[in-house]
Image (tube, rainbow, N blue to C red; front, side):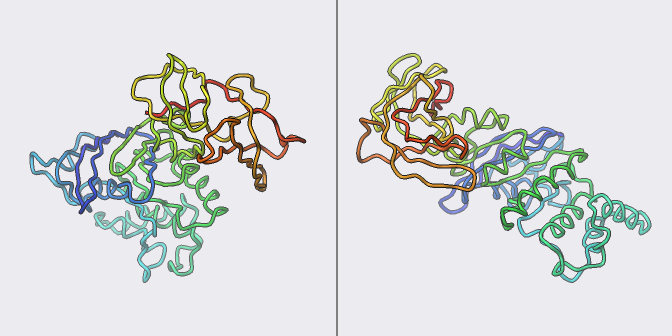
Length: 346
């Protein structure tokens, strides 16, 4: 399975300009609300029509503005799981799944495929219930079954866990990943939750204001987000403007410190980022005097706000996050960070 997307779509003052590819993998698109994630999925599904560009799935052209090709949704073989699940309220779980088999005319085959899907998703015992009686997880599995029973070439998930509480969200993320292990097509999921993206996606694209900033393997993207927007979306709390002062050295005016970096500093540097977990009292590299300020206790960690000794007094405090077990008896006088943990943002 290979998906190729290169499209432009304008809605009022907003302009979506995105280009990326997705192979037979679980790929995510991470972005803030209003960045164009859901609009991208709607264009692929045929719900929205791009102004120009091209969308190709497995060699089949779904949209091509120059050749005036725009296949209707039912001809695209794309499954789209909405945030709300969008189950038919007057139908049972089994009837909802059968709706995914409208093109299959043989009733016996339809019933057999629906029964197999009910068993696969472990919802056979609720087959006769209607959506109003289902839990969030049961509703999601029913909606997923309605899509998968039709064997789409591409499965798209639009913020599938956004309406769930934290405990149920984590449980269903694990469950969904297990359920989709044997799915033969590609999976494209959009989310604003960096933890969700990290857990589920093997590759990740970052979208900001309608543009795809970067597409990388998920762990590689978190290790090197490359841009300020991507650093923010992947959870970096400490970002400050910086300028190159050497092949592997930068100066951070807000913090009034020079940092040694592992990577070569290229032209066009705008800022540096340091994740709150990466400061350590015992690291000798990039070690500077600090003044610890307010501390905040979390269930399993502590967060300390601090300022470098000569930091600009008008700049925000810096975050240091550490486990409860690593909490020092007395506040450290200095903190260091390894050169490879300094994120260079362009």
